[in-house]
Length: 277
Image (cartoon, rainbow, N blue to C red; front, side, top):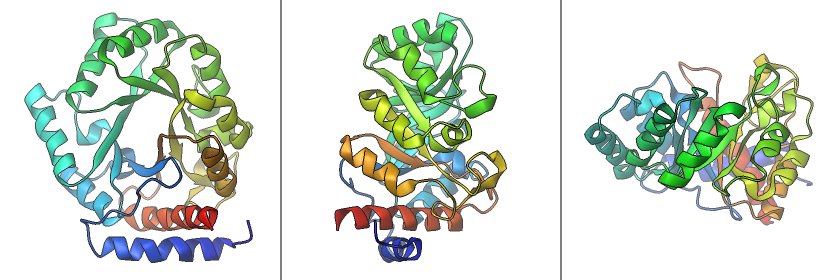
């Protein structure tokens, strides 16, 4: 790709500027077959109303909701009201999580699926164990909710890499798949682009971030300012007609994440604009 990083930020920034001028006009319509969105963990220090406002400020209309913004302890009525708050703001709920599902108890597992169903989440980004996968699959089928197992890198004793997930779900229901976290994946030494290609139709969701040091957990930065091969990643997603969400999970600057998130979206939109050219 001939465009420089500076050019990609500029391409995306023009779109981002127009989006920020009108919350009613989100700009992240499908680019190719996938959509950009926000993992609301990025806004974990914000209450629900401010989180929603911030996402709209970014010109984004797709969200994965973390429990901070829709608590597990909510009643069915409270979940309905919370869901309506997101939907009234024009946000499409692509999923929820990450939800830990390591308790080997069917009632406990199904409790979270009930939560997801009532909250309007068609997908759970999950952190199960190999021992609970059977219960998780059973619940996924019962509630017709997809499960995207999130790999958490070298520290994850259950699923450190995408391949460790694929090995377990390869013979399971199509509802069972993978949420590739590209930052955690890179830190295991795995080639991120190859892992995406290998996942194929089992890739149900993605968490995007950038690292200045691909082996350094604490080196996260604005997307486009690190070493993550974002252009190659988006090319591969486009090649395989990936239809899920590409969700920005911005884990730094928790007290003031919006400026960095907006710059990250500017870069990613620049990449997508360049791929169309």
